[in-house]
Amino acid sequence: MEPFLTGVLAGYGIAIPVGAISILIVDVGLKHGFRPAFFAGAGAATADFLYAGLAVIGGAALAGAVGAVDDPLRIISALVLILIALIGLRRARNEAPTTAGPTYSTRNDLAVTYARFVGLTIINPTTIVYFAAVIIGLGVADDMTLPQGITFVVGAFLASLSWQTLLATVGFSVGRRLTPAARTVATVLGNLVILGFAVLILLR
Image (cartoon, rainbow, N blue to C red; front, side, top):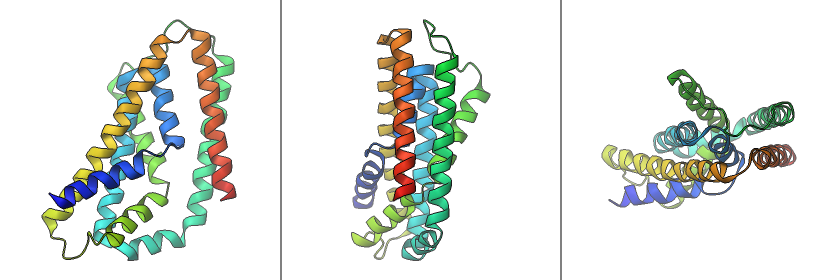
């Protein structure tokens, strides 16, 4: 059970700090409802799952390889966030406030949202470095068997998914209570925060 609990703690450790992905998940819930936001959060949790698995397999060597290309990935990540923020601000300016936000009515919409958030989370190279540091620093990888590695990864995934689901719920709950104008203001503020995160990433 210890690898599982360590995975849970590691999953919360990477998911809880507020970042651009957290803001985007809340924004999806605010504008489109719980279901699309849940799929967005599931995409982010899936990326955490993949990185946790890679960290268990590769450990320090893989973290070092990722660190070698950290700067290009960091720049790409920042540019993608800037693009997302600018598109979001443009839509907030051009779209007239409505009583209810647009909904995602098809499975394809949900699949695209899921895939988009998998990609957005994967381009953050610090995730795999973080998981590798947890595994090595806490000695989790010492004599870890395959079942133990699996339980660690599953624990990390479930922890991340539970947190992302909470964010989706918060976005949905707040969005239902806001007036159309207030929802537009919240969207603008959220995209400005994302823009701020992008600038911080570039300056790091």
